[in-house]
Image 1 (cartoon, rainbow, N blue to C red):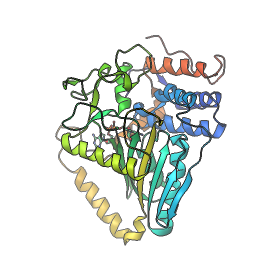
Image 2 (cartoon, helix red, strand yellow; image 1 turned 45 degrees about the horizontal axis):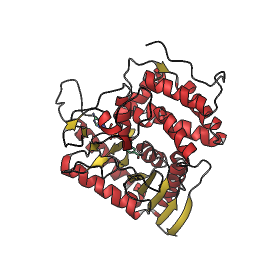
Image 3 (cartoon, rainbow, N blue to C red; image 1 turned 135 degrees about the horizontal axis):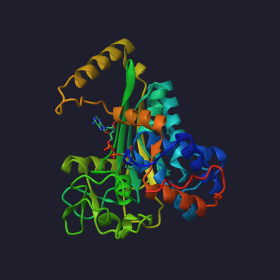
Length: 372
Ligand code: NAD
């Protein structure tokens, strides 16, 4: 996450720049808009690791054919409450939305739906898909892996064998925003290592493990020697990110690989070989109405969330938060005051936009960042 002291840029300005950049790179206007909304949304939520700092990497993926503009999901199988969808390596911004809308419609019609999505481009901040379902009154759970992206060492191991395999849930709460729990099963998401490698927030102790099994916070363990503004490629490093929560987190990540990668047909984490990066996602959608009385559910949820929050703060003045609150706090600040960007991220985006054809004098081009 960028620091609050980093220079900020207004949300509209940032959005227009990202959309213009993807249009210059060959995306249709509506797809470029969707990608811009998707990336800026992650910054608004405070997850800079999944925000506009990924513009250079996404552009490289288009150039290499790893993500294909202009794709739509197709139905591989549809057996009533269960579907398998193929994302054809299209942008996660559009493929994710189509797949989630498919699940929402099914859950509205039949009470419950299970949707397996294979071969999607990067699905970004997975919590946004739980939020989309909640906007339609649907509770959801999303289990995700990243095929080909072997970057996390399992508990007890040194070598990379797992992806950062995120998981997200969304649940409505009466008279306040919903609970949205959304995290990588690695000690930190890879994007956080990328942010740290670009001068952003340092990594927490023990986030990484080097090739000799020593714990580390140095992003060079993952990426190899760090050139300022250079490409961050985890195949260049000799170490790994650690799984979160010791054996329990490692086990959860393994289940994400099996469900998100094997069951969907998207493919599990593994060495970079013939297949491009792809997110696989199994999602379960529930219509709460199908489970019984809406009034009883609302009362139990309301009472329980109040009880949960009433736990005495361990640090005085820092009350217990419900998952989803940190993202809403960040969003309120950033919508009002702009999105903070590290200087390296800002310069990297300008360089990438120029490389992919956005003219220096285009009114939507980002200005140079303020002097350090
Ligand atoms: P994180 O460690 O910041 O945890 C975020 C979750 O914890 C959120 O639900 C948040 O509301 C909750 N939370 C944070 N602080 C809290 C507090 N004080 N009290 C209560 N709840 C709190 O997240 P992460 O593991 O770094 O993941 C960041 C993002 O990366 C996620 O959006 C995830 O989906 C995404 N990701 C995506 C992929 C992919 O392949 N698409 C892979 C890995 C991660």
